Image (cartoon, rainbow, N blue to C red):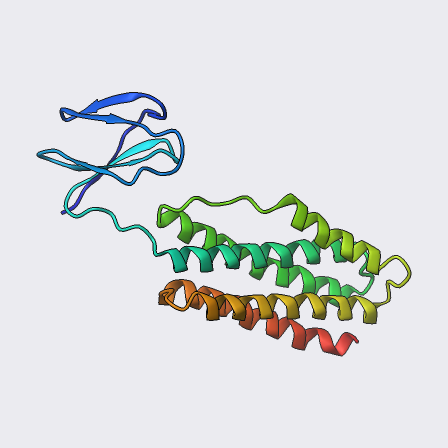
Length: 204
């Protein structure tokens, strides 16, 4: 049965000897080479700063379209969460407040699964852009300066969800070689945001 043995020491920028194989850690992007030895096939990840020993076949890197799709899911879900967080402070309707809280938990779960899939595929998880997140919250604050009615808040959330749905469909059309797992996660986010739009309409 294939085995995976994690080297316990950080190897970034160092020279490591394992099973008479000399490995030098890279200092930039993930190394793409593999070194062979009698017992193991060695794959060095300089980004995560560890050495992974895998017997059998070389570990397969995630397809670029899958990685791109999952990053779009991460990005769009983070934007939706930021919008809910920013607008929640203006909500005085108890039912709407509870609904927004429930929506945020589901979207957060989708985002976390996208991040986990990226990590499992050996991909670097990018931090959400502070600029883009600030723009989302600033837009919410600007649009609620003169009107914080429940109807106006529902309208703002509908517009934000519509952007999210459009973005996910654009990503699914663009990354057309992505596999089922990443496509299903993107579809789940798009479908959920569409359901959020439907649930917001009674508050208009």
